[in-house]
Image (spheres, helix red, strand yellow):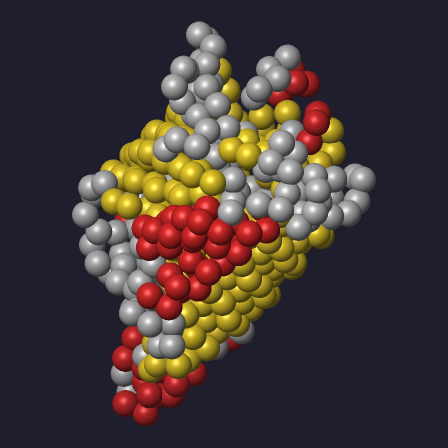
Length: 483
Protein backbone atom coordinates (compact mmCIF):
# COMPACT_ATOMS: atom_id res chain seq x y z
CA UNK A 1 0.00 0.00 0.00
CA UNK A 2 2.84 2.38 0.89
CA UNK A 3 4.55 1.72 -2.46
CA UNK A 4 1.29 2.41 -4.30
CA UNK A 5 0.94 5.66 -2.38
CA UNK A 6 4.46 6.73 -3.32
CA UNK A 7 3.78 5.90 -6.96
CA UNK A 8 0.64 8.06 -6.85
CA UNK A 9 2.60 10.88 -5.25
CA UNK A 10 5.16 10.79 -8.06
CA UNK A 11 2.33 10.70 -10.62
CA UNK A 12 0.65 13.65 -8.92
CA UNK A 13 3.87 15.65 -9.07
CA UNK A 14 4.16 15.03 -12.82
CA UNK A 15 0.55 16.08 -13.32
CA UNK A 16 1.06 19.34 -11.45
CA UNK A 17 4.19 20.22 -13.38
CA UNK A 18 2.44 19.51 -16.66
CA UNK A 19 -0.28 22.07 -15.79
CA UNK A 20 2.27 24.71 -16.71
CA UNK A 21 2.00 27.04 -13.72
CA UNK A 22 4.72 29.68 -13.50
CA UNK A 23 5.41 29.16 -9.82
CA UNK A 24 7.41 26.19 -8.54
CA UNK A 25 5.90 26.84 -5.10
CA UNK A 26 2.42 26.31 -6.48
CA UNK A 27 3.61 23.10 -8.14
CA UNK A 28 4.92 21.79 -4.81
CA UNK A 29 1.68 22.67 -3.02
CA UNK A 30 -0.29 21.07 -5.83
CA UNK A 31 1.69 17.83 -5.61
CA UNK A 32 1.04 17.61 -1.88
CA UNK A 33 -2.66 18.30 -2.38
CA UNK A 34 -2.85 15.75 -5.17
CA UNK A 35 -1.32 13.15 -2.88
CA UNK A 36 -3.85 14.09 -0.19
CA UNK A 37 -6.64 13.72 -2.73
CA UNK A 38 -5.52 10.20 -3.46
CA UNK A 39 -5.24 9.43 0.24
CA UNK A 40 -8.84 10.52 0.84
CA UNK A 41 -10.34 8.83 -2.21
CA UNK A 42 -8.44 5.60 -1.49
CA UNK A 43 -10.55 5.22 1.68
CA UNK A 44 -13.79 5.28 -0.33
CA UNK A 45 -15.48 2.31 -1.97
CA UNK A 46 -14.24 2.41 -5.59
CA UNK A 47 -17.48 0.89 -6.86
CA UNK A 48 -19.55 3.70 -5.34
CA UNK A 49 -17.11 6.55 -5.75
CA UNK A 50 -16.51 9.09 -8.53
CA UNK A 51 -15.25 7.71 -11.82
CA UNK A 52 -14.55 9.11 -15.28
CA UNK A 53 -15.95 7.40 -18.36
CA UNK A 54 -12.41 6.80 -19.59
CA UNK A 55 -8.90 7.08 -18.20
CA UNK A 56 -7.47 7.70 -21.68
CA UNK A 57 -6.73 11.16 -23.13
CA UNK A 58 -9.75 12.14 -25.19
CA UNK A 59 -11.38 14.90 -27.21
CA UNK A 60 -14.08 16.24 -24.87
CA UNK A 61 -15.35 18.88 -27.29
CA UNK A 62 -14.86 20.88 -30.45
CA UNK A 63 -16.62 23.91 -31.89
CA UNK A 64 -16.80 26.25 -34.87
CA UNK A 65 -18.70 29.55 -34.75
CA UNK A 66 -19.32 31.98 -37.61
CA UNK A 67 -21.03 35.36 -37.08
CA UNK A 68 -21.83 38.10 -39.58
CA UNK A 69 -22.95 41.35 -37.97
CA UNK A 70 -24.10 44.65 -39.43
CA UNK A 71 -24.00 47.96 -37.56
CA UNK A 72 -26.37 50.66 -38.80
CA UNK A 73 -25.38 54.27 -39.40
CA UNK A 74 -26.06 56.63 -36.50
CA UNK A 75 -26.50 60.27 -35.58
CA UNK A 76 -23.03 61.63 -34.85
CA UNK A 77 -22.45 65.39 -34.41
CA UNK A 78 -18.84 64.58 -33.54
CA UNK A 79 -16.61 61.56 -33.11
CA UNK A 80 -13.29 60.52 -31.64
CA UNK A 81 -10.68 57.88 -32.45
CA UNK A 82 -12.59 55.20 -30.51
CA UNK A 83 -16.14 56.07 -31.60
CA UNK A 84 -18.55 53.83 -33.44
CA UNK A 85 -18.24 54.41 -37.17
CA UNK A 86 -21.16 56.81 -37.93
CA UNK A 87 -21.53 55.44 -41.47
CA UNK A 88 -22.07 51.87 -40.24
CA UNK A 89 -20.08 48.69 -40.69
CA UNK A 90 -20.42 44.98 -41.49
CA UNK A 91 -17.93 42.41 -40.22
CA UNK A 92 -17.67 38.60 -40.21
CA UNK A 93 -15.93 36.67 -37.41
CA UNK A 94 -14.99 33.04 -36.95
CA UNK A 95 -13.66 31.01 -34.03
CA UNK A 96 -12.61 27.37 -33.91
CA UNK A 97 -11.66 25.34 -30.85
CA UNK A 98 -10.49 21.85 -29.90
CA UNK A 99 -10.78 20.76 -26.25
CA UNK A 100 -8.81 17.83 -24.83
CA UNK A 101 -9.11 16.11 -21.45
CA UNK A 102 -7.44 13.32 -19.52
CA UNK A 103 -8.49 11.71 -16.23
CA UNK A 104 -5.67 9.36 -15.20
CA UNK A 105 -7.19 9.08 -11.71
CA UNK A 106 -10.71 9.54 -10.35
CA UNK A 107 -9.49 12.61 -8.43
CA UNK A 108 -7.29 14.28 -11.08
CA UNK A 109 -8.03 15.66 -14.53
CA UNK A 110 -5.92 17.56 -17.05
CA UNK A 111 -7.31 19.86 -19.75
CA UNK A 112 -5.72 21.44 -22.82
CA UNK A 113 -7.65 23.77 -25.15
CA UNK A 114 -6.51 25.34 -28.39
CA UNK A 115 -8.42 28.04 -30.30
CA UNK A 116 -8.14 30.36 -33.27
CA UNK A 117 -10.11 33.44 -34.33
CA UNK A 118 -10.54 35.37 -37.56
CA UNK A 119 -12.18 38.70 -38.25
CA UNK A 120 -12.92 41.74 -36.08
CA UNK A 121 -15.90 43.36 -34.44
CA UNK A 122 -17.87 46.15 -36.10
CA UNK A 123 -16.20 49.57 -35.71
CA UNK A 124 -13.04 47.67 -34.69
CA UNK A 125 -14.77 46.53 -31.46
CA UNK A 126 -14.67 50.01 -29.91
CA UNK A 127 -17.21 52.75 -29.18
CA UNK A 128 -19.46 50.71 -26.88
CA UNK A 129 -19.21 49.54 -23.30
CA UNK A 130 -21.44 46.57 -24.11
CA UNK A 131 -19.78 45.27 -27.26
CA UNK A 132 -22.18 43.47 -29.54
CA UNK A 133 -20.20 40.36 -30.56
CA UNK A 134 -19.06 38.37 -27.55
CA UNK A 135 -17.29 35.78 -29.68
CA UNK A 136 -14.88 38.30 -31.19
CA UNK A 137 -11.36 38.46 -29.78
CA UNK A 138 -10.02 41.99 -29.56
CA UNK A 139 -6.61 42.43 -31.13
CA UNK A 140 -5.89 44.74 -28.20
CA UNK A 141 -2.79 46.76 -27.52
CA UNK A 142 -0.61 43.84 -28.67
CA UNK A 143 -2.29 43.54 -32.13
CA UNK A 144 -2.78 39.81 -31.63
CA UNK A 145 -1.97 37.55 -34.59
CA UNK A 146 -4.77 35.35 -35.94
CA UNK A 147 -3.28 31.91 -35.41
CA UNK A 148 -3.88 28.90 -33.17
CA UNK A 149 -3.01 29.48 -29.52
CA UNK A 150 -3.31 27.59 -26.23
CA UNK A 151 -6.39 28.97 -24.47
CA UNK A 152 -6.47 26.81 -21.34
CA UNK A 153 -3.98 24.41 -19.77
CA UNK A 154 -4.80 23.37 -16.24
CA UNK A 155 -5.06 20.65 -13.63
CA UNK A 156 -8.27 19.87 -11.72
CA UNK A 157 -8.15 18.00 -8.39
CA UNK A 158 -11.20 16.78 -6.46
CA UNK A 159 -11.64 15.58 -2.86
CA UNK A 160 -14.94 13.77 -2.12
CA UNK A 161 -16.28 14.80 1.29
CA UNK A 162 -19.40 12.64 1.61
CA UNK A 163 -21.13 9.69 -0.07
CA UNK A 164 -23.11 10.43 -3.18
CA UNK A 165 -22.25 10.99 -6.82
CA UNK A 166 -23.96 12.61 -9.78
CA UNK A 167 -23.66 12.00 -13.49
CA UNK A 168 -21.95 14.70 -15.61
CA UNK A 169 -21.91 14.54 -19.40
CA UNK A 170 -18.82 15.17 -21.51
CA UNK A 171 -18.57 18.76 -22.74
CA UNK A 172 -15.99 21.45 -23.32
CA UNK A 173 -13.61 21.27 -20.34
CA UNK A 174 -15.69 18.54 -18.71
CA UNK A 175 -14.81 14.85 -18.80
CA UNK A 176 -17.92 12.69 -18.64
CA UNK A 177 -18.52 10.33 -15.73
CA UNK A 178 -19.64 10.63 -12.12
CA UNK A 179 -18.44 13.22 -9.60
CA UNK A 180 -18.95 13.57 -5.86
CA UNK A 181 -21.90 15.86 -5.07
CA UNK A 182 -20.04 17.17 -2.00
CA UNK A 183 -16.37 17.86 -2.59
CA UNK A 184 -13.42 20.18 -2.38
CA UNK A 185 -11.98 21.15 -5.74
CA UNK A 186 -8.77 22.85 -6.87
CA UNK A 187 -7.99 24.06 -10.40
CA UNK A 188 -4.81 25.81 -11.41
CA UNK A 189 -2.83 26.60 -14.54
CA UNK A 190 -3.89 28.73 -17.51
CA UNK A 191 -7.60 29.42 -16.97
CA UNK A 192 -10.51 31.76 -17.70
CA UNK A 193 -11.94 33.28 -14.52
CA UNK A 194 -15.47 33.41 -15.93
CA UNK A 195 -15.45 29.62 -16.43
CA UNK A 196 -15.98 29.30 -12.65
CA UNK A 197 -17.48 32.65 -11.57
CA UNK A 198 -20.63 34.57 -12.59
CA UNK A 199 -22.11 31.61 -14.46
CA UNK A 200 -25.78 31.63 -15.48
CA UNK A 201 -27.81 28.98 -17.25
CA UNK A 202 -29.66 31.50 -19.45
CA UNK A 203 -26.94 34.07 -20.18
CA UNK A 204 -23.45 32.63 -20.24
CA UNK A 205 -22.31 31.87 -23.81
CA UNK A 206 -21.97 34.21 -26.78
CA UNK A 207 -21.81 31.18 -29.06
CA UNK A 208 -25.28 29.84 -28.24
CA UNK A 209 -27.02 32.58 -26.21
CA UNK A 210 -26.80 36.38 -26.01
CA UNK A 211 -24.04 38.02 -28.04
CA UNK A 212 -23.77 41.29 -26.09
CA UNK A 213 -20.99 41.39 -23.51
CA UNK A 214 -23.24 42.92 -20.84
CA UNK A 215 -25.71 40.06 -21.17
CA UNK A 216 -23.43 37.02 -20.92
CA UNK A 217 -21.27 38.46 -18.10
CA UNK A 218 -21.29 41.02 -15.32
CA UNK A 219 -19.28 43.68 -17.16
CA UNK A 220 -18.74 45.66 -13.94
CA UNK A 221 -16.52 42.70 -12.89
CA UNK A 222 -13.17 43.65 -14.44
CA UNK A 223 -11.76 40.15 -14.05
CA UNK A 224 -8.04 39.44 -14.43
CA UNK A 225 -7.16 38.19 -17.92
CA UNK A 226 -5.04 38.80 -20.97
CA UNK A 227 -6.58 40.25 -24.15
CA UNK A 228 -7.99 36.85 -25.14
CA UNK A 229 -9.61 36.36 -21.72
CA UNK A 230 -7.19 33.94 -19.99
CA UNK A 231 -4.72 34.14 -17.11
CA UNK A 232 -2.43 32.05 -14.91
CA UNK A 233 -4.01 31.36 -11.55
CA UNK A 234 -6.13 29.00 -9.52
CA UNK A 235 -9.58 28.36 -8.08
CA UNK A 236 -10.37 26.63 -4.78
CA UNK A 237 -13.99 25.57 -4.24
CA UNK A 238 -16.28 23.80 -1.81
CA UNK A 239 -19.21 22.28 -3.72
CA UNK A 240 -22.40 20.76 -2.28
CA UNK A 241 -25.93 20.19 -3.61
CA UNK A 242 -27.39 23.23 -1.82
CA UNK A 243 -24.53 25.74 -1.63
CA UNK A 244 -21.01 26.33 -2.87
CA UNK A 245 -18.22 28.81 -2.29
CA UNK A 246 -15.28 29.63 -4.58
CA UNK A 247 -12.12 31.67 -4.30
CA UNK A 248 -9.91 32.49 -7.28
CA UNK A 249 -6.66 34.40 -7.78
CA UNK A 250 -5.19 35.29 -11.18
CA UNK A 251 -2.37 37.36 -12.65
CA UNK A 252 -3.30 40.80 -14.02
CA UNK A 253 -2.00 42.07 -17.38
CA UNK A 254 1.00 44.40 -17.37
CA UNK A 255 -0.98 47.11 -19.20
CA UNK A 256 -4.64 47.86 -19.92
CA UNK A 257 -6.10 45.44 -22.49
CA UNK A 258 -2.65 43.86 -22.81
CA UNK A 259 -1.70 40.29 -23.69
CA UNK A 260 1.41 40.16 -21.50
CA UNK A 261 0.66 39.10 -17.91
CA UNK A 262 2.58 40.25 -14.87
CA UNK A 263 5.29 37.87 -13.70
CA UNK A 264 4.38 37.80 -10.02
CA UNK A 265 1.25 37.77 -7.88
CA UNK A 266 3.00 40.20 -5.55
CA UNK A 267 3.05 42.88 -8.24
CA UNK A 268 -0.46 42.54 -9.64
CA UNK A 269 -3.34 40.13 -9.21
CA UNK A 270 -7.08 39.83 -9.26
CA UNK A 271 -8.95 38.04 -6.48
CA UNK A 272 -12.60 37.04 -6.40
CA UNK A 273 -14.89 35.07 -4.09
CA UNK A 274 -18.37 33.82 -4.89
CA UNK A 275 -21.10 32.28 -2.75
CA UNK A 276 -23.72 30.21 -4.59
CA UNK A 277 -27.02 29.32 -2.92
CA UNK A 278 -29.31 26.66 -4.42
CA UNK A 279 -31.41 25.11 -1.60
CA UNK A 280 -34.83 25.84 -3.09
CA UNK A 281 -37.09 23.24 -4.70
CA UNK A 282 -38.04 25.84 -7.33
CA UNK A 283 -34.55 25.47 -8.87
CA UNK A 284 -33.61 29.06 -8.01
CA UNK A 285 -29.87 29.76 -7.92
CA UNK A 286 -28.40 32.98 -6.49
CA UNK A 287 -24.72 33.91 -6.69
CA UNK A 288 -22.96 36.70 -4.76
CA UNK A 289 -19.59 37.89 -6.10
CA UNK A 290 -16.91 40.16 -4.63
CA UNK A 291 -13.58 41.01 -6.25
CA UNK A 292 -10.44 43.10 -5.84
CA UNK A 293 -7.77 43.90 -8.43
CA UNK A 294 -4.30 45.26 -7.70
CA UNK A 295 -2.39 46.42 -10.77
CA UNK A 296 -0.40 49.17 -12.46
CA UNK A 297 -3.47 51.38 -12.98
CA UNK A 298 -4.27 55.07 -13.28
CA UNK A 299 -6.75 57.06 -11.17
CA UNK A 300 -9.33 59.14 -13.07
CA UNK A 301 -9.39 62.05 -10.61
CA UNK A 302 -5.60 62.35 -10.69
CA UNK A 303 -5.52 62.28 -14.51
CA UNK A 304 -8.14 65.06 -14.53
CA UNK A 305 -6.17 67.14 -12.01
CA UNK A 306 -2.96 66.82 -14.05
CA UNK A 307 -4.81 67.83 -17.22
CA UNK A 308 -6.32 70.87 -15.48
CA UNK A 309 -2.92 71.97 -14.17
CA UNK A 310 -1.21 71.55 -17.56
CA UNK A 311 -4.17 72.71 -19.70
CA UNK A 312 -4.02 69.44 -21.59
CA UNK A 313 -6.18 66.40 -22.28
CA UNK A 314 -6.33 63.82 -19.48
CA UNK A 315 -4.36 60.62 -20.08
CA UNK A 316 -5.11 57.81 -17.68
CA UNK A 317 -2.19 55.67 -18.90
CA UNK A 318 0.30 58.42 -18.00
CA UNK A 319 -0.97 58.19 -14.41
CA UNK A 320 -0.39 54.42 -14.14
CA UNK A 321 1.26 53.43 -10.86
CA UNK A 322 1.74 49.98 -9.28
CA UNK A 323 -0.36 48.90 -6.34
CA UNK A 324 -3.58 50.70 -7.34
CA UNK A 325 -6.82 48.91 -6.41
CA UNK A 326 -10.25 48.35 -7.90
CA UNK A 327 -12.98 46.47 -6.08
CA UNK A 328 -16.56 45.56 -6.79
CA UNK A 329 -19.57 43.36 -6.12
CA UNK A 330 -22.13 41.44 -8.14
CA UNK A 331 -25.31 39.41 -7.74
CA UNK A 332 -26.58 36.87 -10.26
CA UNK A 333 -29.93 35.01 -10.23
CA UNK A 334 -31.35 32.30 -12.48
CA UNK A 335 -34.90 30.99 -12.18
CA UNK A 336 -36.19 28.01 -14.17
CA UNK A 337 -39.87 28.33 -15.01
CA UNK A 338 -40.93 25.43 -17.22
CA UNK A 339 -39.96 22.84 -19.85
CA UNK A 340 -37.43 21.01 -17.62
CA UNK A 341 -35.70 24.32 -16.96
CA UNK A 342 -35.12 25.26 -20.62
CA UNK A 343 -37.57 28.13 -20.15
CA UNK A 344 -36.42 30.54 -17.45
CA UNK A 345 -35.30 34.04 -16.50
CA UNK A 346 -32.14 35.70 -15.20
CA UNK A 347 -31.09 38.91 -13.43
CA UNK A 348 -27.61 40.35 -12.93
CA UNK A 349 -26.40 43.46 -11.11
CA UNK A 350 -22.81 44.67 -10.78
CA UNK A 351 -20.95 47.60 -9.22
CA UNK A 352 -17.32 48.66 -8.88
CA UNK A 353 -15.76 51.69 -7.22
CA UNK A 354 -14.93 53.28 -10.61
CA UNK A 355 -12.01 55.29 -9.21
CA UNK A 356 -9.22 53.46 -11.01
CA UNK A 357 -8.77 52.73 -14.69
CA UNK A 358 -10.95 50.14 -16.43
CA UNK A 359 -8.14 47.71 -17.13
CA UNK A 360 -9.14 44.34 -18.54
CA UNK A 361 -12.67 43.57 -19.66
CA UNK A 362 -14.62 46.66 -20.69
CA UNK A 363 -15.53 50.15 -19.44
CA UNK A 364 -18.50 49.56 -17.12
CA UNK A 365 -18.79 50.62 -13.48
CA UNK A 366 -22.51 49.89 -12.93
CA UNK A 367 -24.67 47.19 -14.53
CA UNK A 368 -28.23 45.89 -14.36
CA UNK A 369 -29.41 43.22 -16.80
CA UNK A 370 -32.43 40.96 -17.00
CA UNK A 371 -33.95 38.63 -19.53
CA UNK A 372 -35.15 35.16 -20.30
CA UNK A 373 -35.15 32.13 -22.54
CA UNK A 374 -38.22 30.37 -24.00
CA UNK A 375 -38.20 26.77 -25.22
CA UNK A 376 -39.34 26.03 -28.76
CA UNK A 377 -41.44 23.15 -27.47
CA UNK A 378 -44.36 25.61 -27.45
CA UNK A 379 -44.29 25.83 -31.27
CA UNK A 380 -43.32 22.19 -31.89
CA UNK A 381 -39.55 22.84 -32.18
CA UNK A 382 -38.43 21.19 -28.92
CA UNK A 383 -34.70 21.84 -29.39
CA UNK A 384 -35.03 25.48 -30.53
CA UNK A 385 -35.14 28.43 -28.14
CA UNK A 386 -35.70 32.18 -28.11
CA UNK A 387 -33.85 34.72 -25.95
CA UNK A 388 -34.76 38.29 -25.05
CA UNK A 389 -32.98 40.63 -22.61
CA UNK A 390 -32.23 44.22 -21.61
CA UNK A 391 -29.21 45.84 -19.91
CA UNK A 392 -28.29 49.26 -18.56
CA UNK A 393 -24.69 50.28 -17.84
CA UNK A 394 -23.27 53.30 -16.05
CA UNK A 395 -20.02 55.01 -15.08
CA UNK A 396 -18.68 56.54 -11.89
CA UNK A 397 -18.71 60.35 -11.84
CA UNK A 398 -14.91 60.47 -12.16
CA UNK A 399 -14.89 58.07 -15.13
CA UNK A 400 -17.63 60.06 -16.89
CA UNK A 401 -15.80 63.37 -16.24
CA UNK A 402 -12.61 61.87 -17.68
CA UNK A 403 -14.33 60.93 -20.96
CA UNK A 404 -16.15 64.29 -21.08
CA UNK A 405 -12.80 66.07 -20.87
CA UNK A 406 -11.57 64.22 -23.97
CA UNK A 407 -9.83 61.33 -22.24
CA UNK A 408 -9.64 57.89 -23.82
CA UNK A 409 -9.88 54.40 -22.38
CA UNK A 410 -9.12 51.23 -24.34
CA UNK A 411 -12.68 51.06 -25.73
CA UNK A 412 -14.22 54.52 -25.35
CA UNK A 413 -13.23 57.99 -26.50
CA UNK A 414 -15.64 60.22 -28.43
CA UNK A 415 -13.57 63.35 -27.68
CA UNK A 416 -16.45 64.73 -25.58
CA UNK A 417 -19.41 63.31 -23.67
CA UNK A 418 -23.03 64.14 -22.90
CA UNK A 419 -23.30 61.47 -20.23
CA UNK A 420 -26.26 59.09 -20.15
CA UNK A 421 -26.65 55.42 -19.32
CA UNK A 422 -25.88 53.07 -22.19
CA UNK A 423 -28.97 50.89 -22.72
CA UNK A 424 -29.07 47.62 -24.65
CA UNK A 425 -31.88 45.44 -25.95
CA UNK A 426 -31.15 42.08 -27.57
CA UNK A 427 -33.19 39.20 -28.93
CA UNK A 428 -32.04 36.06 -30.74
CA UNK A 429 -33.45 32.78 -32.00
CA UNK A 430 -31.66 29.45 -32.36
CA UNK A 431 -32.73 26.76 -34.80
CA UNK A 432 -31.08 23.64 -33.37
CA UNK A 433 -30.34 20.59 -35.54
CA UNK A 434 -28.95 17.34 -34.16
CA UNK A 435 -26.56 15.12 -36.09
CA UNK A 436 -28.96 12.85 -38.01
CA UNK A 437 -26.77 9.73 -37.91
CA UNK A 438 -26.64 9.24 -34.15
CA UNK A 439 -23.46 9.55 -32.11
CA UNK A 440 -19.85 9.67 -33.30
CA UNK A 441 -17.82 6.62 -32.16
CA UNK A 442 -14.47 7.38 -30.55
CA UNK A 443 -15.49 10.73 -29.09
CA UNK A 444 -16.01 11.39 -25.38
CA UNK A 445 -19.36 9.87 -24.43
CA UNK A 446 -20.01 9.14 -28.13
CA UNK A 447 -20.89 12.76 -28.80
CA UNK A 448 -23.82 13.85 -30.94
CA UNK A 449 -22.95 17.06 -32.83
CA UNK A 450 -25.39 19.97 -32.84
CA UNK A 451 -25.77 22.86 -35.23
CA UNK A 452 -27.22 26.16 -33.96
CA UNK A 453 -28.27 28.68 -36.60
CA UNK A 454 -30.28 31.85 -36.17
CA UNK A 455 -30.66 35.63 -36.28
CA UNK A 456 -29.70 38.18 -33.64
CA UNK A 457 -30.89 41.77 -33.21
CA UNK A 458 -29.55 44.45 -30.85
CA UNK A 459 -30.60 48.05 -30.23
CA UNK A 460 -28.30 50.40 -28.28
CA UNK A 461 -29.21 53.88 -27.11
CA UNK A 462 -26.56 56.35 -25.88
CA UNK A 463 -23.66 54.31 -27.30
CA UNK A 464 -20.50 54.83 -25.28
CA UNK A 465 -22.65 56.63 -22.64
CA UNK A 466 -23.07 59.54 -25.06
CA UNK A 467 -26.59 60.99 -25.45
CA UNK A 468 -25.30 63.13 -28.36
CA UNK A 469 -24.72 60.03 -30.52
CA UNK A 470 -26.96 57.22 -31.68
CA UNK A 471 -29.16 55.29 -31.31
CA UNK A 472 -27.76 52.39 -33.31
CA UNK A 473 -28.96 48.89 -34.16
CA UNK A 474 -27.17 45.68 -35.07
CA UNK A 475 -28.37 42.74 -37.15
CA UNK A 476 -26.50 39.47 -37.10
CA UNK A 477 -26.61 35.85 -38.22
CA UNK A 478 -24.83 33.20 -36.16
CA UNK A 479 -23.97 29.58 -36.96
CA UNK A 480 -22.40 27.37 -34.29
CA UNK A 481 -21.38 23.71 -34.64
CA UNK A 482 -20.29 21.76 -31.56
CA UNK A 483 -19.97 18.38 -30.00
